[in-house]
Length: 152
Image (cartoon, rainbow, N blue to C red; front, side):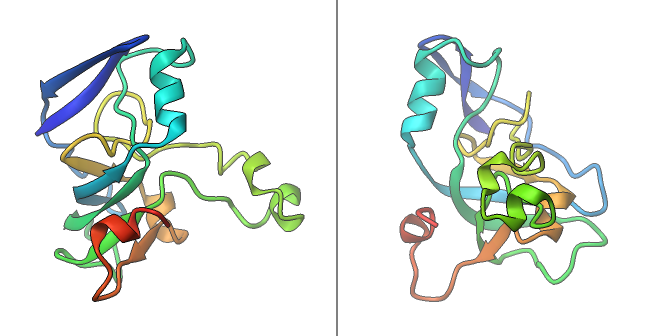
């Protein structure tokens, strides 16, 4: 697959990489159709905030390409929005609507390879089980484009 890889401050490289493979029974692989470019992505590229290599991109919409054997109700071919992190909804922060402080929310774990960093700037992104199980995939209704859906 092709991916835009962060190799250092202001250094991006368009590379050919292996397609991520499912290694757990509760994961989902999504073929990326659209990814937004967020100001936070630009900040991550311009400033020394993260160690390379990484694949950024977190406003992702695409089509499910593979599902782990224990994944329900998701199916290959479904159009989805991928949430790169989600709150637990159980901790004190979440119970007080302060989701961005939740430790689970801060665990960005979708990946297209390398350290989990969103992964949408690649042709495929691997969605881990805790995101699949906890509402981190959202079906895209008929009549809604991938572009529109990526703004969720």
